[in-house]
Length: 428
Ligand code: PMP
Image (cartoon, rainbow, N blue to C red):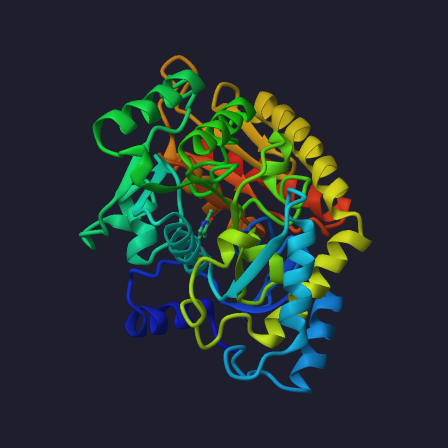
């Protein structure tokens, strides 16, 4: 058997440091919300492969669907010989996405690719170049999406320049004292200073900031963005890559606000662990790009499409939207208890929507100084005790919960007990 340490050493020699791993362990086997490393040690997984596993590791229905597809064919390229599962999945996504207008769906492979394509489609539909994104937003690591991502370190550091015609608006933030009104004033000022509104194709926003710290967009802000987009003929793009597919208790997080976007980007938990992403949008907008202008060799891979159809069915059949809401309430209550008991005045905020929850840690309540070192230490202690946790946030001082919605109550509570012990270790 291999040791984690030996594999870490080989990895350091063979793989660039830029692709950093949160855990110094190597995976051997995983099932639902549990994972075993190559040394046979068991972990509870609260990270879900960065919000990809709302239906858990190797959901039996997902695996069965993928295997059945593998026995037929694994690749033709939809652009050469199409297959039904792509179309069935597009139909399903068109039904699930908010709004009763006609919709169409493009399938690609990664989240960044979905965002790139949403921008291309919005540009073709409007004949305009501009894109407005928000501070703290995360949209990917390709050069266009990095330009839209609103955080320098580690994503944008040293790799610019980025494409032009990308503008930044402020995201409302309690920490920074930016109210919804301030944020909207910032956006309107942007229209006066840099971004001529009739030259703006799209405003893109995560309905719940993901990498930026699991901060929900206040619903009145989302409604105001819809009105601003309508006034200026701008496409509203909801980036649901991290928040979608049940994480927040609805199929798409934007549903909580009642706002209907023009385009949605989706990925991650859509396909239960297979690489698949998509752009879902108004049919007229989606058809703006000419034939041949969209796609890619692997886009909408048949095995991933089969997995996605099964994952979506599992979310429906197992009541995972309701489970997300219930898990969110459970986590919130337990975090408040644990904070009061184990680390008074260090948990500055518990926030999110449904089971898309984060805790923000500070050095103390008076200064509310972000404590990224504490989050790092909690993650390290949790890993030692058998729990995989991941941080997030502009200041790296938030811990986020991305546990499979299929996890049993016992596993959740076992994970929470480990979290409490790790928190005690970290502040000791
Ligand atoms: N948008 C959001 C909101 C994301 O959370 C992510 C991934 N963390 C992306 C885009 C990029 O997706 P990918 O890593 O699959 O390219």
